[in-house]
Image: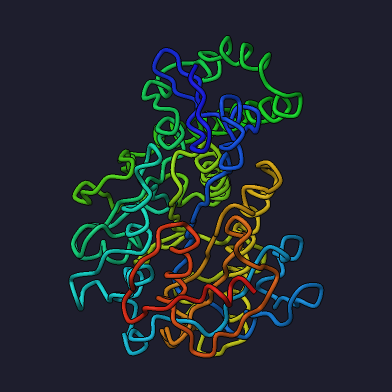
Length: 449
C-alpha cells in the first residue's frame, strides 16, 4: 500500500472495492520528510445545504457573539454547536431583489443569475467554479446530493442549485444505496449480501500494526460507522422493495450519480420521499453519507438540497402541530396558525443542519475536527415565502475553514453581497476568484474576525 502525505489518498483496495482511509496522522506523515510533515494537514471543504420557500422571519435570527450569542426560536436546535456557527444577516444577491415569484430563485442561489421559466438560463454556480479549480485533487470533482427527485424540462431550473453552465444543471443523487456504492467504487454492493469491509479486512489488520494507538481507535470507529450505515441502508432498501411490490406502478428513482444530463430525471413519487416514516431516515442517511464522503476525501465541494420548488413537497405531518401543506403555509398571510406551522418546518430543517454539524464535529483530524476544517452553509432561495422576497437570505455559515474563520457570531452585513461572501469562501479554499457577479472584493477580514 502506498502512503501519501497531504492529499490523504491512502486507501485499502480489493476485489473492486476502494476504501479511502479517514484522516490518520501517522499515515499522513509515515513517509514524509521532517520539512514536509507540517504540510500534512487535512484539506478544507465547502458544503452547501439548501431548502426552498424561505422562512418565518418573525422566528429567525440571532444577536450577540460568543457566550452572549442568542439564537431566535427557529435556530435553537443549534444551541449546542452555536459556537461554531455564524449567523449572516442582511445578505443577498444584490441584483436579484426584484425577481418575482418562485421562478428563477432556486437556480440563482449559487449562481447569482435568475433562471427558470422566465429566463430559461442560469449561470455557472459558485460550487462548480470552485470544483473546476480544486476538483482534480479528489475522485469526484464535486458531489451533488438531495432528497427529492429532479423535474423535467424547464422545471429543472427549480430543482437544481448546481450548474456547470447556463444550460447544464447537475442532477442530484437521491438514493442512499447508490450513493454508498459510488463512494466505495463498488457497483456490485446492491447485488450481494456482503459488507464492503469484508474485502479489505486483511489489509486493515496489517495497517493497524503500523499506526499509533490513537489512529487504531479512529480506524475502528470509522469501520464501525461504515457498517452501521450499510445496515441502515439495507433496512431502508428492504422497506422500499416491500412497498414497491404493493404498488400498481412503482415510482421511478434516480440511479445516476452526479450526472450532467437531466433528461432521465423522473417527476414521480419516491418511496422515501412521500412516506413520512421513511423520509426522516432517508434524510439522516444522506447527511451521514455527506460526512462519510468528506471524511474519505472523495470530494471537497458538495451541495445538498432538502427539497426542490415544485407542485409536490415533503409531507411534514410527522411533526407535531403541522397539518398544512408546506407551500401553502409559506403563503401564511401573517395568519398565526400558518406562521407557527411554517416555523416548525423551518426549525426541522435547522435541526437536520445541526445534526450534520455535530456529526462533522465528532470527527477528529489532528488538532481540529472535520467541521473546523470545513465551511458548511445553509440557506433558502428567498427570505419571506409569503412575499417571495429575496432582498436578504436566511443564511448560516458554520465551520472554521481550517482556522481562518472566527465563529460563534451574529454578523449584520447591512445590505451585504452574497457574491462577496463567495469570494471569501474561494480564498479560504485556496482557489481565489478574480470576481463573482458584481463583486471584486471579499469579506475575508470580516469573517476572520
